[in-house]
Structures are given as C-alpha cells and as structure tokens.
Amino acid sequence: MSAGANLRTTAAALPGGFRAEPRTILPGATIGVLGGGQLGRMMALAGSAMGYRFVALDPTPDAPCGQVADQIVAAYDDVEAARELARRADVITYEFENVDADVAALLEAEAYVPQGSALLRTTQHRLREKRAVEAAGARVAPYAEIRSLGDLREAAGRFGFPCVLKTATGGYDGKGQWVIRSEAEIEPAYDALSRAKTELVLEQFIRFDKELSVIAARSPRGEIRTFPAAENVHVENILHLSIVPARVPEAVRREAEELAVRIAEGLNVVGLIAVEMFWSAEQGLFVNELAPRPHNSGHYTMDACRTSQFEQHVRAICNLPLGDPALLTPVVMVNVLGRHLEPVIARFAQPDEAAARLRVKPSLHLYGKRDAAPKRKMGHVNVLASSVEDALAWMDETKIWKV
Ligand code: AMP
View 1 (cartoon, helix red, strand yellow):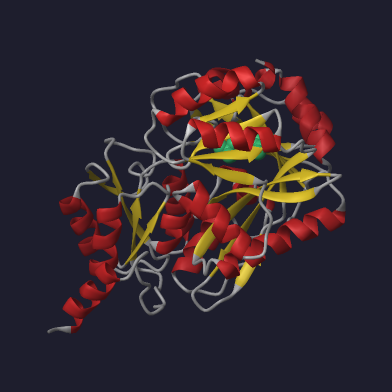
View 2 (cartoon, rainbow, N blue to C red):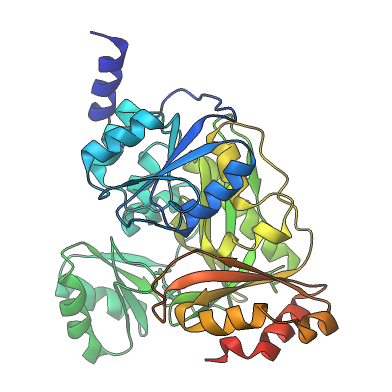
C-alpha cells in the first residue's frame, strides 16, 4: 500500500479527521479557498500582496473572491470540483464553517489542509462547541440540551424568562433562534425550531452590558497572537459596529484576550479563531460563539492594526511567523448593508468636511456584490480617529446609518 493510500485510510478512520504534518508554504504557492465571499476576497487581497496566488471554489459566477482570484464555479458539495481545487492548490483553507463533511474528508485526504476538519466539526454544532469551550477552561451561558417539549418546559422553568432557544446547527445572524419571553411562547418556539430537524439548545438569557470579540491566530508551530478586543453592536441581529478599543475596563479586555488564547490552545487551532463573548459587569465574561475563520468583527484590523486579520490568517496557515497585531489607532468599523450602499458611495465621491473637521479618516471597503438587498453585507467603513468618540461623531454626522 502506498503512503498516500495509508493517509486516506487514516483520514477516514479517525473521527473528526486528522491533521497533516505542518508544512511551510512559501510565497509563489497557490492557496485554495472554499467559499468565494467577502472574507475570501479580503484574504486573497492580503495574500496576493504577500506573493501568493489564490483559487476559490464558489457556486456564484463572479463571486467577490473570484473577482480578485481564480475561481472554480461549482456547488460546495461537488466532490469533483473539490478534487480540482485540491489539484490546483498547495494549501487549502475555508471562509465559512458549514463545509460539507464529504468534501472536507476528500480535501484532507488529497490536499494539505493545515486547519484540519476537527475544529469545523466542533464549531458547526452549538452543543459540541459549548462543551469544547468549557473543556478549554472558559465559561458559557448556562445551557441545556433539548430533545422534547418536556425538556424545554423543564429547562425554561430552571432558567426563567427570557431564555433563548437555538438550533444546534445552521443558524447565523440570529436565524434559528427564538427569545422565549413567557410560558405561552414555549410551545410555538419549540414547534418553529424543531422543524429544522436538528438538536436544540436552550440558553439562559445573559443581561450583558457589552458584546465583545477577540480574534486569535495560531500557527502549526504553536505561536499564538491575539488582536485587541472589539466591542460589537448588533442591529436586528446583524453586526453594525465594532468599536476598538472596547469601552470596558482594561482588565476585562485583558481577560477576554486571555480567554481567546486558552481557546486557541485548547482547541488546537491553526489559522484564526474568532471568539464572541458577552460581558456583564456583575457576572463577568461568557463565551457565546466561535468562528474558525476571519470574522466581520475583525475587519477593523485592515486599517487600524500593524497586521490585518487576513494577513495573519495567511501567515498562520502557511506556517510563517505571525505578524504584530498591535493597534495603531482607535477605530470604529461600521458595516455597509444594501440599504446604505447608495448614500455611502455618494458620501465618498465628495469632499468630506466633517471628516476634515473631526480629523478622522474613513476608509471604505466594498465587496463587489451586484445584488444590494437591504440587509446584505456589501462592504464596511473603518473610521480611524484619535478617539472612538470622534469616529462615532463622524458616523452621526453622515446620517447614513440612522435608517
Ligand atoms: P448568536 O447567533 O448566538 O450569535 O446570537 C445572536 C445574538 O443574539 C447575540 O449576538 C446576542 O445579541 C443575542 N443572544 C444570543 N444568545 C443570547 C443569550 N444567551 N443571552 C442574551 N442574548 C443572547
């Protein structure tokens, strides 16, 4: 039996996959990306500047990443297309977490996937994720696995109202969850979410003062660096602002960054891991969710840090020394949704008196998406300023984000 066949057997036999021996991937090599959205695009832009080539697999022709890299147009569960990606790339990464299990197994067997698929398996499932976070020594909101209406009644009785019912898989941007506010909502919430045919989890509602996130990078050689904690503001369950430095006590920022290091180590991460948290002044920090990839709440790093999250991700998967994540300036990142696109483009086409007066530097990043649906993420603006208050004042004066 050849060594290659051996590897394939091992990959199939081990639950959660295996991880190949670390390799150092030098500039000139090709990085294959599963997914061709904005995260892949910004990864390719950063990595191209470093001398790498990129090929993305995405079903939408002319996807955001395909506009700045090569693209294989095919469905995410198309095994033949995954095989072509494996053939063309020296290293493979992904820009979303719902990678098809068969495709992940094939890629691990036929290509070099330094991040492995074990972490994907963990973060694809809220219950597995919570257990892994706890095992790494971090705290999550009290939760219960829900298998029946009876389980839900019992757990809601224990946690009190409100409490949050979530599907274990498939939810994002607030989809697949229901904040249960009273006894009367238990049954409708259960009926609605159990239609998703996945396990359910009930969480105690945390009366948080702030939502924070920290992005950590870990390389196969075990080096770990964290970006400064971001304070995140969501509107209609979609990220609206990331404010850095986060407006919480310095000790909380430090603790949040330490938690991210513990998780990156405990989960044996390679590449980036975004750790979303709740902070309550009374109760401290709780980890809410993980994302094993570049994250919207890390877009501020593109203009405000010595190294961007995208460059850091490329460095980590290629086993290069990690870059310095230090913050150079206070910053507010604001997302540009479809409904903001026209006014934002108009604003940036004219001299900006408010920016000059407030001495802020708003930097616009657009993703090249054609269909500007009202809630679709089309781009973001990083507002660099001498204080986050000045950056917020500029946003206030533009009036674009008031709608
Ligand atoms: P998620 O999909 O888990 O990131 O949840 C989306 C948003 O819902 C979070 O960013 C919070 O604003 C809110 N949320 C989710 N779970 C809880 C919870 N246990 N307590 C309070 N708010 C929550």
